[in-house]
Every structure is written in structure tokens, then in C-alpha cells.
Length: 445
Image 1 (cartoon, rainbow, N blue to C red):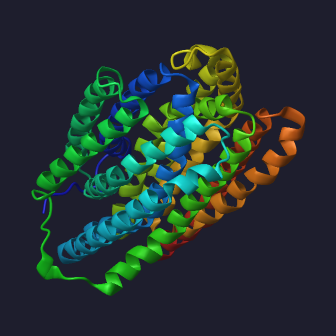
Image 2 (spheres, rainbow, N blue to C red):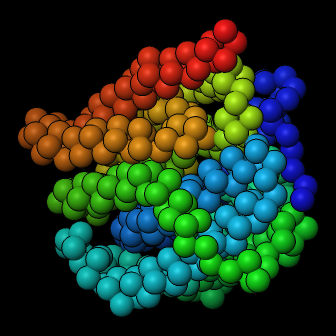
Image 3 (cartoon, helix red, strand yellow):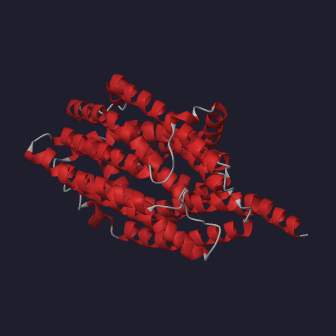
């Protein structure tokens, strides 16, 4: 079984080597999303609003499925650190079966109840609602494949091998980038074409991951379902999954509030979120890298190395986030006009970026800390942090919109991100690290 030992070597070099392929995958995805939004944006604010509306429920699916991805990733990384190859294969087998069940059920739910989900947003625009449901219905089978693609990427990360995932992601992105203009404009399918292109690309990625994974580990039905393993995966993954589900549900409720300001506001948030995703190219890579790094080093009981890795990742992330904050605060209009030309949408989206810019450093600290908590196998901590401060966004939005209109929603989001990042850092430094530092000292004495 091929894997990379993350418990040895220079911490900075190991983290960067591990993070770069993840960042590369994120960069590829961002590049696709950038071009995708450019193509869709040319259709107008209604088209962007349609995809933006359906994306909340697509995101909900990823949030639910996170318990499989996170739980399996944690147990596989720990087993690798403990050099227990048999346990590695058992956790992978049970994680894949559980993933198939969750993906199948959620896909059916979207097809059957998707129209009601879109209507809940109260968009007040029949064209946007119609296109949003069509996009959502086509995205249902896409999610089944995408759930597996996400799991495979996490498994490769646990093994410390990300180049294969990067290459496969590159193939998927390139296919998607080619199909988008063909489907949207040449075949004149509009928003529906964008959904079909994404479905085809994810299906091809799924087949490539299946082929490549055979060289990494053995998937054998003779292993059989182990309900204790499934229980362990579920217990570890549920807190973070619940956090993400709650986060998405809060965003859906916020979308209902945003919708009261018109489809331009929905489109503006979608564009703002798309631009904001540039932060996650690096921070998401650091999150994945530190999770795998901490997982293996925790299994090997190298606690001092874990702390050094955390500090290194935080330093890299904060420097990057500072640069992004400067761009968001001082040049938001330039970024927004890459996607849309309608002045009202540009105005709203620019305010979104300017306000969110003040919280980017704290959001970065939160994401990196979450990766560390995940690696330790204590996902309840970031879940509790996120639950408390994410729910806070609803009353903040209701209060602040009275004084700042739609900007009140963006201000509430920024405040909650600042609080989450601050609390996550303090909990790591004064609770998690203190406990394992004491353990290290006791083992020495």
C-alpha cells in the first residue's frame, strides 16, 4: 500500500508539498468557476440568480455528505499513522459503501422535492425559479458522482498523495470548461447547458478516480460491512457535517431575506461568493494539508511537531488572507465587473466584497484550525464554534438590515466570521495544545 510518511522531515516543506496539489486542484476549480460564471454572467442577473438559488441546496448535499468524507478521512489517516494496513482497507470499504447510500438518497430527494425547495426562497421571479429547478434536477445525479470525487480526494490526502487527485481534477475542469460554451451558447441550452456540462465532467472524474484508486488500496467486497467501523466514521464525521448543514441552512434562510431585495441581490451574493472563493485556493489547501499532517502525527504521538505545523500553516494563511483583504476592500468593483455589467448588481456585489474583506484573516484562521481539530479527531470543537456563531447571523441580519438594508446581511456575516476565527484560535492555544503539551511533558519525565 503506497503512502507518504508525514511524521518526518522539515515541517514547512512537508506542509507545502502536501498542500500544493490541493491548492492546484482548488486553482483549477476556481479557474473553471471563473470561466463558468463569465459564460453564465453574460446571460444576465436572472441566470446568475438561478444558479445561485439552486447552489444552496447543492451545497446542502455536500454538507450532509461531509460526515462520510471527514469521518473516513480521519480514521484512514490515524490508521496509516499507526501502520495498520488492515484497518485502512476496512475503513475505506465501509466509507465508500456509506457514501453510495447517502449520495443515492440525496439525489432522489432533490429530484422529487427540488421545486418546493426553490419556491421556499420566495424569489418572486417565475423564470428564475423555473431555471433554478431545472439546474437543481440535473445536478442531482451530478452530486452522486461528485460525492465520490470528494471522498477520493480526501482519501488520497490521508495517504499524503495528492498529485493524482490534482491530475484528475484538471481533466474534469478542462472538460467542463470546453463543454460550458458549447452547451450554453452553441446548443443554446442556457442555464440547463451549464448543469449538463458539470454532470458530464464529474462523471468522467468519477471513472478516473475509480481506475486510479486501484493502485492505491484494495477494494474488496469480501471485507464486508463492519457496523462498528461505520459507527466510528459516523460519530467522528457528524459534528462537522452538522456544522456545515447548519451553515447551509442559515445561508438558505439568509437567501430568503436577500431575495426580498430582488434577484440582483441574489446574483450579487453569488458573484461575491465566487470571487471570495479565491481565498480558499490557498486556505483550503492548508486545511487539507494540516488535517492529513496532524492525523498521521497524532497517530505517531508527535505532538510538538503538530504544534509547529499549526503555527506554520497559520503564518502562511494570514499573509495570504491579508493580501486578499486589501484587494476586496480597495478594488471590489474591478473584480465584480469581470462577471457582470448590470450596475445595480455591481454595486451590491462590491459592497459585499468590501465588507467581507475585513473578516478574511479570521476566516482563514478558522479554516486552518478546523483542519487541526479534524486531524486530532475532535471535530465537535469546530462544530460547536460554527453552530453558535453561524446561527447568530440570522438575528444580526434581521436587526442590521433595518439600518443598512442588504448590507446589514453582509455585516452580520463578517462579524460572525471574526468571532469564529478568534474563538477557534484561542481554543487551540489554551485547551487543545495545552493538553497535549502536558502529555508530551509527562512522557518525557
